[in-house]
Image 1 (cartoon, rainbow, N blue to C red):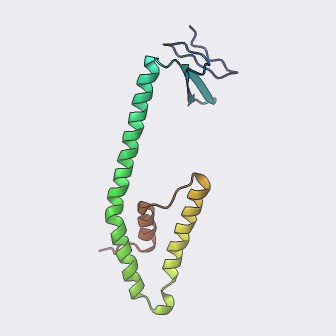
Image 2: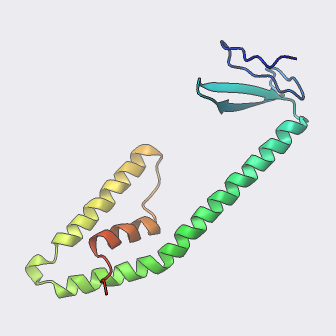
Image 3: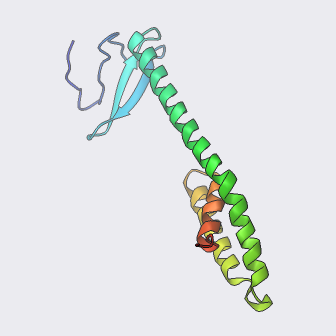
Amino acid sequence: MSDQVDRQARTVPCLTCQAGRDRVNTMVLSSDEVGLIETWHTPDCADHLEADHLEWEEQMEASAEEVRREQEWAAVAFPAASARLQEALRALPVEQRTTPFVAALAEAVELQAVKQAGRGGFVVLHEWAQILDRHFPPARP
């Protein structure tokens, strides 16, 4: 059993099961400062099953918490920003009503283009609320 990494193949053996490339085994990719590393595990490898489950659980909990915080903020921020937008629209003379609205729309369109070019997806509620907050900020006391 060796702790040496095969630099050419970038494969590190599992210290528990010593699995190799085989279609019944599972490959886990990780990375370090050099690049990607392959580690193979047998289907019943305790290290893989435990580590995989814990990592997945931590990622799910972190993601759920982030979504919860964003939704909580957006539930308050979006209606307030939308009301400010409507109020600002009513306060402007007819000939000036488009300027801040066009800027907010242009920012939303740009964000949608970036999302689509990257990984896909849509501008979501908390992002709309952030855009509206920038262009129609809350009144300062």
